[in-house]
Length: 623
Ligand SMILES: Cc1ncc(C[n+]2csc(CCOP(=O)(O)OP(=O)(O)O)c2C)c(N)n1
Ligand SMILES: CC(=O)[C@@H](O)[C@H](O)COP(=O)(O)O
Ligand SMILES: [Mg+2]
Image (cartoon, rainbow, N blue to C red; front, side):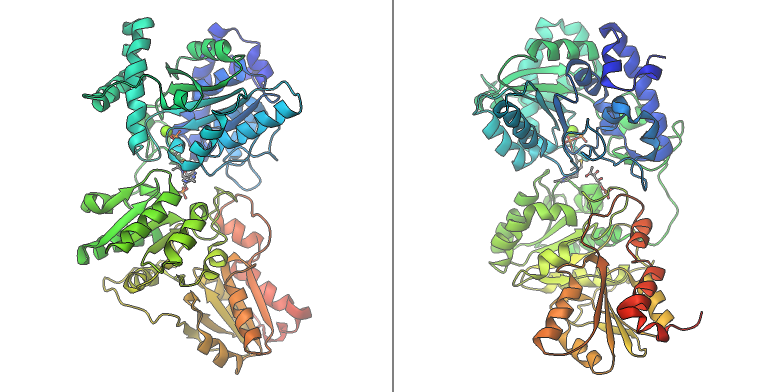
């Protein structure tokens, strides 16, 4: 077996080019077995497999810089760079990171996870090499989905204008997580049709047209070129790149030859590679969405759709609410930046196709689009992961909040997200939202409250945010009825003695354990902004310690809001702020992450018991 002896790119280079197709078959089998055993991102890696082998075969990594956009497709990169035996640990506690990570390997040249950064980073490294007289190539591998984000064009605009050698490889599989959308996707198809047919003519139509992936692209090309005038030069050439392609991204020998031919051309280069997401595993080829990210599954049976009825996740609660609210109000529109499935908009997109907008990977555009819609009578819901909303922070402030526009931000994956690790954690939205004037910020303690908060947010005339974690909460089935909550009001769940636990968001089970352990008062604060000042004031008169609790950074978080109020009001009151400490929390399960930072029940008990030299441990009820 060829792959048995391949641990580094140097080993790879010992093979003949003719051996590479067989190697790819072995790597594909290994990848499938490993990811079916461990879970992780799969379809993208299958699609980028031959490209990964060819790049490491031709280029001198790690001296040459190779940057993977998003990085979810880089499992084969990890296999070929000394991490084969660890691949089964990927995304697990103390295991490999799910994305390239500088600290993990000298072959991981740039940390990724958020899309569309690769061209900027690769250009930065190309310029650094040039300025320091280092002989080094710089390559960015970016998908057609990632190429829909504005950041990629900022980089292309710069890279194409300066005579610095670098290579941008577009891995075009016509898929984002969902099918790719937008004019660019159609443009790439037109490119295929123009260059595609000329390439096919040159390289003998029979061979290329009959490869499944090229046949599929031929159909796609036809579809998007009816009556079109073929561009004389591609967009990328107009921006200053030398354009090559499209080429079959599963023909590893062809890829090697092309990469060797263009490697030393001293220009900004753009290689358009066409691939199939999920290539080589029929279930994934047929369902690239379902195999984008997988849990452990049986290779023979494939991923099984779980049909056991259980209480809905927060995401499902949102998706159901969106449809129910849309049925009541025709002004409602739903916007997602390329996360239809993850954010729970599949049902809405089917029931209300004319009010559903997937704007591709374009978070900044999503937010300002919503602002424009809100100016002229619509009620937009921006469904977005907390971590990805970070990319549209200025648009949220400048275009929505400053103009006090009625946009609802349905923020999913808030707080610790588990196996995707620090690049995807939503640890900061309390901190980055509550400082913005006009914002209302809510955090539900269970799935029913999530529904009520979404409804409450929708009733407001200004910008609102409801943030909720990945997965399920306390398993409370949402009521059908939607009712408006009193804005800025929390609720006392449990009256206790001298300690009051002020909980913000989804740590209700953990907070309840701690409240019972100390016989403490437990408060569901519900609103981070406006915070329930009257409740805080009255509780301060009957308690001797506040414990604030949040699945958010302590710094600037909800606990800070309590601290600020007490200080402003000259209320002297000890406060223990429990939340995410000022560091990055590594990938693990969410439960392991919470335990690691003392936000599980026992951890909160320990924090309270040890606070101020154990002053309050006397209140600890004997077990
Ligand atoms: C800024 C940002 N928004 C959204 C995502 C979520 N996301 C991860 S992969 C992906 C699709 C990427 O499509 P493409 O670049 O074509 O890669 P492919 O999966 O097709 O290989 C998206 C939207 C992200 N990682 N970063
Ligand atoms: C790579 C990427 O950014 C997405 O695939 C992300 O991993 C999805 O996260 P969820 O699995 O929480 O939807
Ligand atoms: Mg793609």
